[in-house]
Amino acid sequence: GESVGLHLPTLSVQEGDNSIINCAYSNSASDYFIWYKQESGKGPQFIIDIRSNMDKRQGQRVTVLLNKTVKHLSLQIAATQPGDSAVYFCAENLANAGGTSYGKLTFGQGTILTVHP
Amino acid sequence: DAGITQSPRHKVTETGTPVTLRCHQTENHRYMYWYRQDPGHGLRLIHYSYGVKDTDKGEVSDGYSVSRSKTEDFLLTLESATSSQTSVYFCAISESAGNEKLFFGSGTQLSVL
Image 1 (cartoon, rainbow over the protein chains, first blue to last red):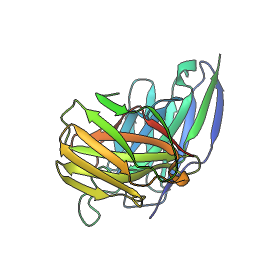
Image 2 (spheres, rainbow over the protein chains, first blue to last red; image 1 turned 180 degrees about the vertical axis):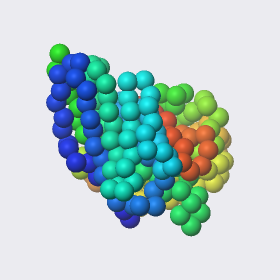
Image 3 (cartoon, one colour; image 1 turned 90 degrees about the vertical axis):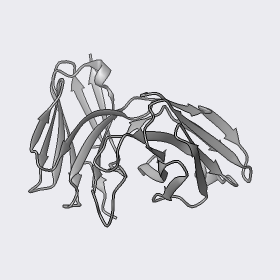
Image 4 (tube, rainbow over the protein chains, first blue to last red; image 1 turned 90 degrees about the horizontal axis):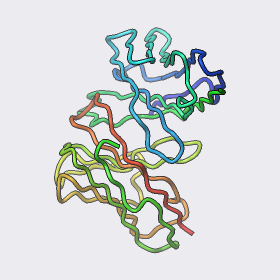
């Protein structure tokens, strides 16, 4: 099946800078996308999601941008803090492909974000 | 972790032995999932459940079976563990089907020697 990939496997930023984590997807029929954060020894934690009928969605210090033309997803973190250091995954869900998708997400490999104080 | 408890958190076992991992949720969510996480592969779906006694296979289901006799519990069984099943296993739940964010447990680190 089609999969979600990441442009950059690692990203290092200084505390206070803005971070941008990118994700490319190949399935043009995917209609729902999610970003997760995973800290060492923990399970993935939901950050923000976006549906394909939107281009942008904002949360607390995070913004997700969706460019369907080039099949690209990005996560922007404002004023990055040391506590933001983690692995970030994007995931896509193809809804109703011959039935329901039951939340069967396809995950990317992840980007390691390191924030230096 | 959204009312999800996985047990055990760590397990070391020998090749050929049976292993059962348990996922317990207190959210009363209908949908439950088992994923494994491996370097270079990310998170991959093993099995999922869409209700009591209703389960189906994911993309990497070979060598695994599941059972769901109660809403709150979803068991993953390795009938005869192999070294290739050494991994971190995550349980996840969701309230509704499709286009719905999953909430994950803290994971079980399984080592098969």
